[in-house]
Length: 158
Image (cartoon, rainbow, N blue to C red; front, side):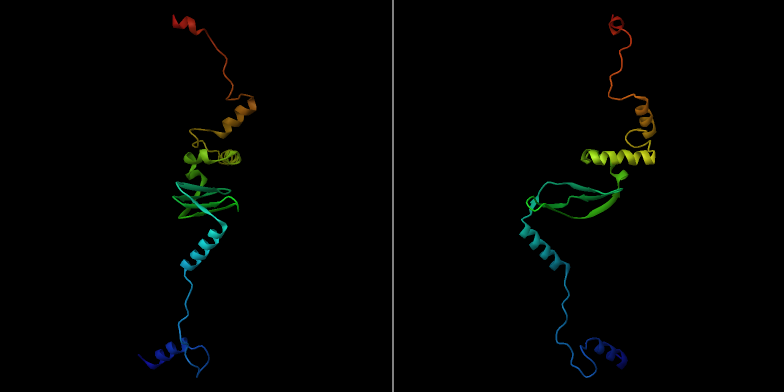
């Protein structure tokens, strides 16, 4: 080793200026394990319990979904606290659409209808066309109505 490199290394461990003593112990940095322990202690104080058997969690945002697969879910009903931990992915709503329709509430379904109307998505929902549905609603035709009986079926059965 040359002298300049040695002096540079020795200068990095000084606590004061030239002529001061070296520090006696190395500074210990916090690890993420310490933060995790503190978080677990705080959650234990809140009285959270682990909820087993949850396969996926979806958190709906404006135009995206935070998707957790096999998360660790903890909840405290008394303090209205829910903790979801595990690997998360941010996905577009269209990527998860067929599988998450049963998870969506009424507010989300209206938001989904608006989104489909904006996109004019004929491929979503098994050939659903937002423009045709709006025209049918404007014409007064409701899909829930039973059509009128045309013809005599008893004569055709003989």
